[in-house]
Length: 338
Image (cartoon, rainbow, N blue to C red; front, side, top):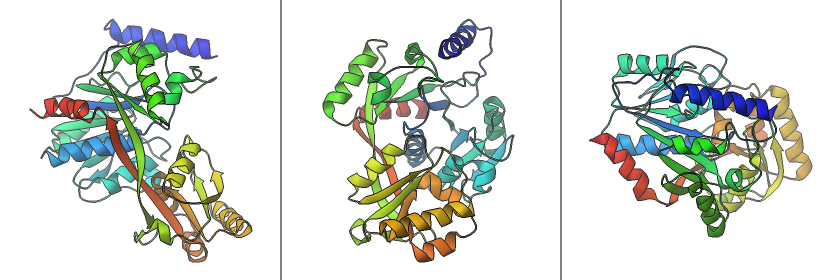
């Protein structure tokens, strides 16, 4: 099955390269932030980082996402730059998170990226569009293709879906203008990942990590000191690679008694909250901790206030820290601002 999947992806890319499948260009620059493996590379925090930088430069910025897992279809504005215009269940968890985080940035979703980009240009006149998870969506042309990869996806077993994590063969690296490596545990692993990439492409490489920034209460937004958290905690998450969240919690000094992993983009139910309360009680935990992406899916679940009253629900906020090549990324972004 992986062989057939890889063949299909290769043929599709050849059709785009040959001009048989059309690539539609917008009148404003499009920055694609994507990956070559499934989930867990830090796309959403990187989109937030880039959007924040460009907004601070005085540009009108819009973010376009597919809105994976949402209970709706078609073009929808998630944030007009001033307020959230759609609930997480109809917008998707990641667009809803970005709408809450990125003040002054328009966020929209559309599974048809070309149509969505045209609507954004028509409705909001952005000066730049950031395409979230856009590396394989080649029908929308881009001025900058930033490809993100975890070091383990480069150095480990490089198997295509469904046997492995890869969406396409690593030959796809050649299409990127810039490659970002995340998830490396030490400098040696980063350097080995860079060497493996440079064996396939001469494109510049940056290295970034997700670093914990703060804890806050889910329902009130109040910031909580990690030293003030009653330990241990029950962690829970519905993300692609939950081990990364647990590692980040430990970096922040949080003692994890139990980590309950739900499927990626999981929509929580009241019975899940009851189960979490039981696990917290059984493990002696005094609070629960989850991710930003999970937080937007929790707020409308019946029973969340009761759970929070019994075991405070905390959200760990993390952000991108570029350890290697920040100046390279900034140079690429500045070139689009001229």
